[in-house]
Image 1 (cartoon, rainbow, N blue to C red):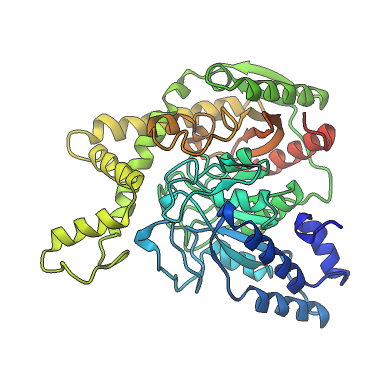
Image 2: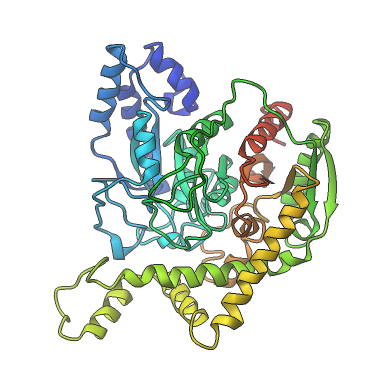
Length: 480
């Protein structure tokens, strides 16, 4: 008999409302699944009140009370999104005992829709990484091959969904951190348009790049979760003035007609299996009646250095607050020397990769180097954004592989930071340009998933989802 946790949320919802199952029984089954699969290390913290909260939803349904669009949905939350009363660590010793006194806006919005917070998922420390190996709480393993990584930095969220430990999850994407684990784990993951989803309550890594995004087993569930978390937030001045942004799959949506391939994203560095799956996906797109053209965008040669200069500069500024006085780890001794105390706090509280990015970011922003690096990176970013705007005047979407390879072996990239940074070549440009990008499964290579990335102009999430839905329909259930 098929377990409940294998079902996507929209099927579970129907069973819940038809009173075939109770939310509490479903939650209990999920908790047992998490316990059985604890070696995956997808979660850092489980919500201890989940069964009681599930019982409340059951009672509301029993009494015929109105419930929200996410009633009974158990959602895994990346551990850099604040949850009132539930530990939020950023996978760092620095915040290992931090319990927020408030909810992030996205958490408030899913709670209004009667969703339940299942727990907080593992990640690279302060979202700085692409494998979820750089966590104070140990690495997350890929549920399809435990000798491989789940991707990062939202690897815990990706693994939880892929391993049926949660039907839905929220991640945060700074340079591919939702799309990378979606690709490596074979699920759907979306980085929304910058400003579509509030970042209030997200513990920042790089403010101008990051967006909270949904992850799910199905596009229908992904679109529902995106609809629930999107919209203007007075507490986040970067959010767009949109009152209602609904991504309904009840009616067949408009799909892309003309798409572009950027030569610089498919030329070098792609594993053979990834390349084969990508070009097989192009044949499906052609069967959909989509015209495909190849373009060159030389400026993308500078996308990786541009991204990391901006991200590290913003990270060094954001993490300056962790001094053991206002935020972060506290020590019982050493207060008599302020400078040494802060040095000791940061030495003990931060991992090696976080220290590396703080040092590099501080260097980038220092006198004499600010104009040489940071100002030039911002200029390149502006050119990239303009070039994407130019392409989207003629084409509906840009397509590429999500990642240049299948999931890495554990330890394969973590000891070589530069090699790990270069793995983000396919994803960082969407963050630099502030455009939406969707990763969807498009087949397997060496028995591991390969992701296809769709990028569109700002606020084209509906087009991305409708095109992906038609791609899924034609491709069917059989992966190559």
